[in-house]
Image (cartoon, rainbow, N blue to C red; front, side, top):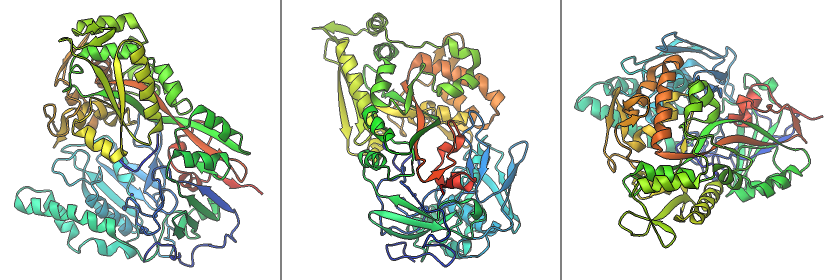
Length: 603
């Protein structure tokens, strides 16, 4: 799948003539040579974009000339374990009510000025304007910060609003992008913290304060620093439409661990261009990119080419719009599940970057073993079975007409699947599913739309019958199940209370029933159970996860197709010391690997 800046998630003028300050090494004379890579989250380099990490086109690259307080580890069940970033140590209160963060005593920005707790406080202020999870201004938002206190020049404490706590509060804090106050200080008004305090109330004054804070977001996105002042291991030296060049930041607190003297980001517009770079051996590293088998074989032939694989807490599912008939009938959804050979789909669509889902549980199968234990074996696997599919279709009242399944009234039925253009694995998967369904008497088609942002907009508006949807976004249990039983399926968490909207309202495009009678458990409200996951520990979460897994398995709001494998491409010709197979660092760009002391230049 082409990774685009989305969800998520998922950013003086830094132009072709911009230069960094004297604290960097543009000649590369410090040794270590040139490291070449791409930013898989964002195709296209905009030479006119600012050195601004909040600008979607900004020339700031995560882990390189951008630094966060810390980088979360890829733990199967705990979201609050981290690698150091700007913060070198931290302490989370036993009841998760606060996190105290320590900066390195010798921390500096690339221009030589000290990195302080005031920089972090300003950065948190900016995070409030961007809708950050821990720094939300929506009244009653789960896991929102209550107070931000500078303890001393290198220590800052952030407390959680315990009226609606979240188990991943610390993660939300540590994900903060840190920027220098001496460069960014003017983006927030002098009375910002007073406005923030006022925004936590009710009434017109609070409403106005929230509106003003949100309004600052666009000002911050548009901000253009005169030069890139970086807290990361590199600083932007120059950029043109073909590439961006970064040079080593001598003032980075762990500078002695950074091997390359320079980093070059190459421009690309699609997966095919990345494949060509890899085949030619031009990249020292590329993050996950969907690759067909024949291309993968050519990539592996490049001298020094290696593929390193790790756990990726995400699955892809074939999701149904239950406001569209006949997908409101669970027997239709089950019948389709029995007609789709998931191994064949995965082999066609993501042979190197995915493993067929063992079943539909809503959880990636690796953490499913931790969350569900022996209960995982009780779930229906939905292996290909034409006879079971026929029985389910008949139970739904579907009829066979001229060798094709038709709706109960005899009118034609066609499964219409939609995918965004450029998502090669999704389109290949849907084409394969289409062939499987047609072969087994179900008419089907694949429709593509221009791009991923349009896809998200239109699927949220309920325009599609069937679309692909990312599931199982761990490790936090709430994040895992809000993909199935969150806002897209009618449930929203407002001030700790779960509210359900009917299908077609407030972004509810899935349209599941508000309650489900789960065999062996009884009637449950899956959205309310998902909401409970937001503020309980792992042991309390496990029985809830079991109930939700059984509900997803029985009711099938989506058919889980494959679990992603995080396949990273590296080249050993110029650098060594890459993360090993299954390293939880693989979820982050190579700049973060370098921060932790990995990668050495070959001599």
